[in-house]
Amino acid sequence: MSPDWSNLRADFPILHQNVGKNPLVYFDNGATSQKPRAVIQSLINYYERDNANVHRGLHALSMRATDAYEGARARVAKFINAAGPAEIIFTRGTTESINIVARSWAHAHLKPGDVVLTTEMEHHSNLVPWQQAAKATGATLKYVPLLGNDGEDGLDLAALDTLLTPQVKLFAFTHMSNTLGTINPAAELCRRAKAVGAITVIDAAQSIGHLPFDVREIGADFVAFSGHKMCGPTGIGVLYGRRELLDTLAPDETGGGMVVSVTYEGASWKPAPERFEAGTPNVADAIALGVACDYLDALGRDKIFEHDAQLAQLAMEKLSTLEGIRIIGPQVGQPRGGLVSFAFEGVHAHDIVTFADQDGIALRGGHHCNQPLMRKLGLTSTTRASFYFYNTPEEIDRLVASLRKIQKFFAG
Ligand code: C6P
Image (cartoon, rainbow, N blue to C red; front, side, top):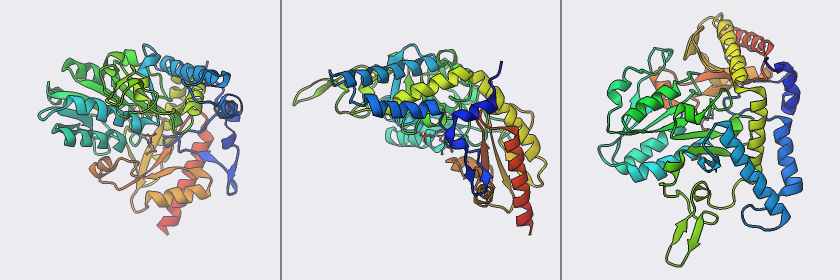
């Protein structure tokens, strides 16, 4: 049975406010999701009762903080079905997670003649680090093309046959595009990469809190995601890495907490995950991320996906009735995740976002950290409505009504 979605709104204090004269419609979940009371309370509890540094103290608070921090690591491992907590490295977010792989793995393993493969739909966070790694090592960066004038046909999976050569050492791709809403077939991409001996890196920033995700079933080597897009706090994220791979990697950052022994001449490293967590970690936010995992698992990410995908289809159907709208990514009836990006000729996305805000509706407008993709589609920006389980069909009606008003205004 599906949860009672509208009752769940009571768990999110922030949703119960007016923006100007109108009740808030929060459609910017792709940028960051809102936080349930349980996550907020976890932060308060930690700072009111348990706050101490971890792994260092023998006093009660430090031991409580350490237990809760390591408990959160185990909780996240369960959330994605990792083989164990040692495969979970806490980072600041998706961006830092991908950069760790690009600096630690790629710099150690890439040489001239090697190829790093990514796709034409990547967020800058899963593109620029590979450009930098390729530049530093002499490797070549190649892209799996995106099909369709509006990017509606997804990645060119046939092109993979020629692109995935034994020269490809690493294939980094997004699980769900933050701009198109496309969901890539992660398990198939990992299987095909593995067949040529390439390591896979999945950017799961947009998918992890929205659909079931099993790292072992997918067969990923590395997975990056952010807590703040899955009901957790900002400033905490995860790099999942297969244990065998993590243990062969040199640390990206060095300092306290990650060493076994230090002399004036040198130092030796602890195994993963400590090896990759130099300095005092973000204890409070990691613990709250564990609470976010509990919250999402209690709802069921299969149910969340169903809900979000239904809202996206409803939005597409209703938005399609607006004259001159161009929706990018999968079209009405094609499978997609819970976000919709669109453009109107002659009206800039920033104007749409500003006007919608006056109706209490929070959207995102711009290039969504996807400049090469925008250029490919012949756009400079789009407006994006991104949904989560607390959004409702009535809110979609308010969006469409607001857009109609905006269109009328700009038509003069
Ligand atoms: N996308 C959006 O509005 P960080 O900032 O490290 O938490 O996540 C980066 C990131 C990486 N990959 C994808 C697919 C993403 O969507 C994001 C963040 C936000 O779409 C902010 S640009």
